[in-house]
Image 1 (cartoon, rainbow, N blue to C red):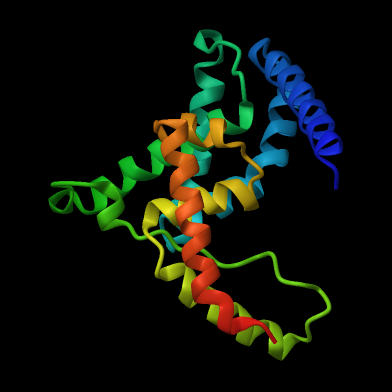
Image 2 (tube, rainbow, N blue to C red; image 1 turned 120 degrees about the horizontal axis):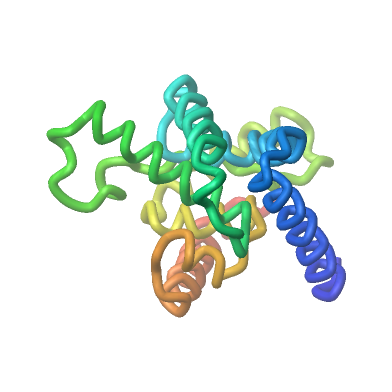
Amino acid sequence: MTQEFYQTKTSNNSAVDQSLWQAFLNGDEKAYEKLYNKYIDALFRYGSMFSRNRELTEDAIHDVFTNIWKSKEHLSSASSVKLYLFSSLKRQLLRRLKKERPYVFMGDVDHYFPLQMVPSVLDEEINESDRKALAKKIEKCLKLLSNRQREIIYLKFNQDLSYHEIANLLDLDQKYVYNTASNAFCKLRELTSFLIY
């Protein structure tokens, strides 16, 4: 896939999102439903990085969509609908997790909620037993990364967000995001060199 094709695909996707978002802000229920259907799976996967509690993640997603519907008259256009939904979900999940474990929050959130990340970019030609063995090895390697590194790698490769979008979502400096990703790749390269088969 060329860079030009990727940029065209991304900008087309963004234009569709903007159109749906604007229609939703104007009270169009079908546009709201389309946004929900388009992002529900991606939101669930992202939310599952913060909690293995399926019900809690589903409830948080439900709250995000309920809240945006209730407050649509007060919402403005979003430069990235995906980013807005991911950011809203993360805040909603952390609120819920804080309620469950209020005594835990005395420092950095990332320290208390290790992100779960399951590799999803395995080659289709690998047979099932090889795939499971390789997935376990990759998962072990990913666990050796910091929470921040795992989240950035997930958002970059599983959700196709740019470094600029990731920086906005995580409220970080773009250069920091790029350097963190670069360090994570170097570490993964070292850790996964033994996985070549």
